[in-house]
Length: 172
Image (cartoon, rainbow, N blue to C red; front, side, top):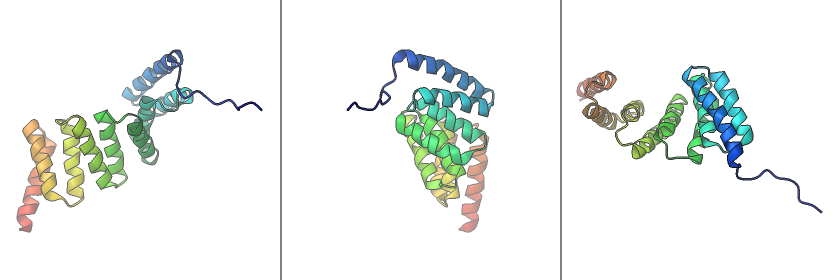
């Protein structure tokens, strides 16, 4: 009795290169805000290579930006499982978790982004936001103060820290 055919576990380089050209078109669609087009192109790549980390990430990113937050979360989570080295992927997973009101998970994602890129102002600011929303005011203040040390012109961090400082002073 013969064994049933199964797809190879690795994708041949020539096939991957073909998928990569489609992925570049998906990246252009994302930059242009054409979310559904980007999703369709990513799905073409994933039909060839279901474990193509960049295609999974772009599909999740397009879903998040296209307003389909519930679809984005598992895709972005899968992308960081496939390749957890990229701080921007962790950052977007954090945004997706925050949008789903999973604040502790969002904070963990922003911290993961910061472990990979310690001076990433956007992740540090968003970490402050989820910490503040979680009631961790002093930790949020520390995150926003760090943002201002790195970028003294960051107006949103300055406003957020000022508001939080006033709230803490009024509560005391």
